Length: 71
Image (tube, rainbow, N blue to C red):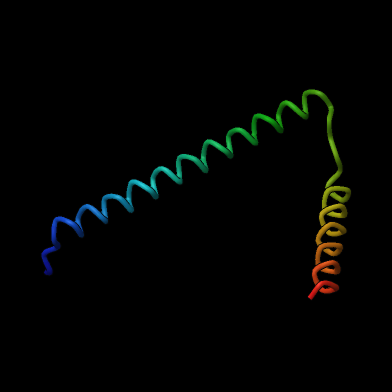
């Protein structure tokens, strides 16, 4: 088994700390989205799935067309 240097040990600890912090941030953002969604539902601000995906599809197609024209 290879012994790591103190620097290597600290680097691994730093990477672990970063990964944990990132996971906590992601979890917090997911909770914020859930709360916002529940609030929207309670205020009857709803959009059908087909409208949402249709809008996203149109936006992506428009961006792809614009990108291909400029390249």
